[in-house]
Length: 199
Image 1 (cartoon, helix red, strand yellow):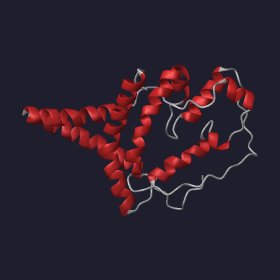
Image 2 (tube, rainbow, N blue to C red):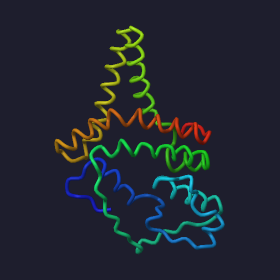
Image 3 (cartoon, rainbow, N blue to C red):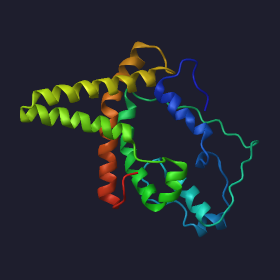
Image 4 (cartoon, rainbow, N blue to C red):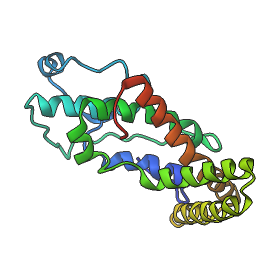
């Protein structure tokens, strides 16, 4: 996935697909194997984690995955709207489904534990709002300061290897504020839908 000379954080993140362990954008599967594992699970309604689910199904069925370095696909980055990362958080619903189906492989190959940073940041934001509403302004101020510091750290970390443009900086500031609570919200939606633990 070729990157532009001055990539945004979102473009750099998307280009990580080039290093993925298994991607359906560039793989060949024998028909008999695909039928044996039941093909794609159509509950994955977005282009997210459906390839990991197929990959894990193949592994669990005892199939070998063999890399062929000469099979190269050029997958250009598509244009992404401003703050597109906000809408992408809905995909976290499918992390829950994948975790429910393959808890061991999910922990081994996707995420070793819950997203603690997002959980802490979201908790501090909720604590700030609830404390302010309850009239506990000291607690609201402390939690607001902690939330602000962690959010700033998140923003600066994302900016480090990203395009140094005003548009990208504005986008990263906005998404650094919104993404953690949204990511947690959509995980909770997934848990309610699929009855799984917290991925």
